[in-house]
Image 1 (cartoon, rainbow, N blue to C red):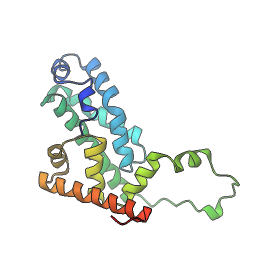
Image 2 (tube, helix red, strand yellow):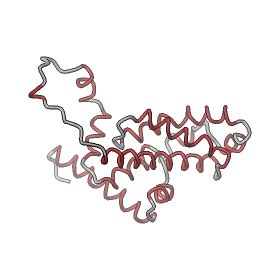
Image 3 (spheres, helix red, strand yellow):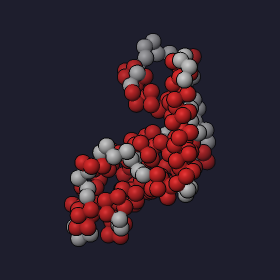
Image 4 (cartoon, one colour):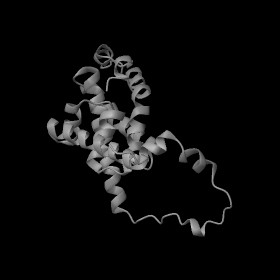
Length: 189
């Protein structure tokens, strides 16, 4: 899980010095983490991941002066806010009237859209389709561990579960993904 962490431009010294110069510190934090937050939200099925990403950073800005734990504390705070915004989004979506699904029989177009053609074979579309086959807790653990690159302890804090429960959820999620792929490929494990 430490792929990008070692090269993060946000380090403990920058976090410590950022308490004085909020504007440039915030700009560096936004440039570094907004793409990852947007990916986390997109993988979570948020309808407007870019808009919600902006909400996350708007909520973060007033809290910058109270960040503790250096760069890792900042990262955990960012994804705690992102997790809360994702939960809020899904709660609001379930309380709204249901959207009418697309009915291909009523579509009079003769050709598929360029967007559909581009997205159907993309690795992102395939990964999202695989995640759809998992339970919500399994998807959330993988999003926080893989996309957000958070530790088991940080994920446990965000999801309000024990570290053992998170480790077990991750194990079961990965096993479920493996079983999906095995069934798709028709190969016995």
